[in-house]
Image 1 (cartoon, chains in turn red, yellow):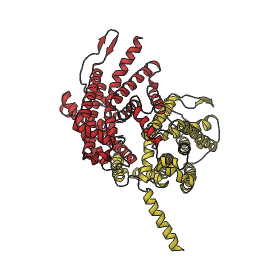
Image 2 (cartoon, helix red, strand yellow):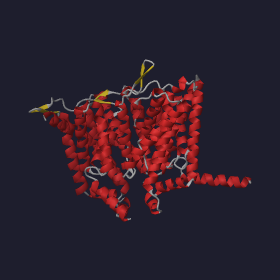
Image 3 (spheres, chains in turn cyan, green):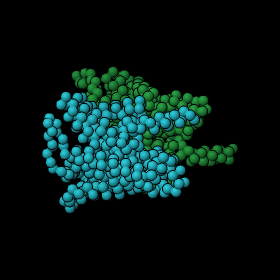
Image 4 (cartoon, one colour):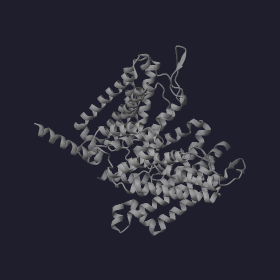
Length: 299
Length: 303
């Protein structure tokens, strides 16, 4: 029983990092309705900018975090301009493939600039795990969980209580109608991309500093963990992204414990497949999917 | 030496063309699959087991591999084909990753001539030696690859002129309108997925026998996404599109050694720019329409 609860706790902590990734993903998807495969790689580049600042100036944690976020945002803008703004809206596949080739490009730029592949990344805090009765918590993951919670609140406020949020929701609902209402659709999408990249940068910093190292493979990992967590939670739903991330973390923690490490990803993908077949809307998005299905049936 | 290198590069282009064609077929019906590498993998293992462990002749092994891949495609298609857009794409991704991870733990070995042969989890599957045992040279094997590729390509060209091809394009354009014509969209989509699986399977079986060694990590999602990208670079208007994409990527850029370390930096940028100008690839539907018109004009002028 103690094992089971400790597994759940580990999973929730691991899941916080997935949740952080999924939030940025779902924000971009919700507005663009297009998949950005470069999301993980661009925050990976951000983390390498952080590494550079650390290696060159021996900077403190705040400066490294800031450099990571700025790097992620700049690369995010590059991706938005090249793969999304420049390609017309109807061509979703072209945008996706374009974001994929840019992923390959970013990965190679990083390998050229950082030829050693694996680099040390300074930890954010150096504290021992906290013991609480039979259970223990790692401080880094508690910070991650807290940041994910703060981000959700912040995003909720931004989306529901500001003019920009209203515009963003309008664009996400129907970009053409939003345009007729006098909303600058391009600017809204651009800002959404910047915000998502900034959140992604924060996520990258927290995850990479908890791991203590960074490799170019982080991009692939971040894209796919974020994508799975987003799909489990329900595409385009922010609370869904959090729940999906936590669910993914818990399932992985349990599979590692009961089945072994080699089953970790297998059970995650199996769960995802089951969700897609039986409940494609995920934990929080089923209503939207069913509404769409009903609309199709009416036609 | 140089000849062997050329033969290897050409053989690679041929084999990758199969998986690119398979992704292309699904793009034609309007679906993006991140998972065609699964069928490539299933067939690589299936045909390898057939020739190396069961002692089947090569041609039967290739056929078996393609059939197993087709069966696997049918198994995926039935539950996932009604999913649309990104849901289908992620479902194929999940399936393909499951296949890869299962091969990471799948062990099935028998003793042949005092040696253990067969897939051994993450250590991979060694000694698929059928073409070397029967003294097929690298050049002859390349001819086999291109012979099969030609057969598949002719199949695609016939398909594009047929009623079935028209239905596939129509589904890609607007599935709901197709349904209204009284056509069973689900059934046609399942057919497309199975056909795509078989095509990828032929490539996988050929690959396993040329490489003599397969390991699960070759079949990761990068292979599948590359396959998708090839179709989109070359163009979605014709089955030659994916072949052009593969040839550009592997052939042209492999041969320019000067940029070897920076290949993706240059290539990635170029493709991104190309997709801005031509979001459906070099030879898209409009370009093909124009080309066919010119061709007809030429033929008329001759006669």
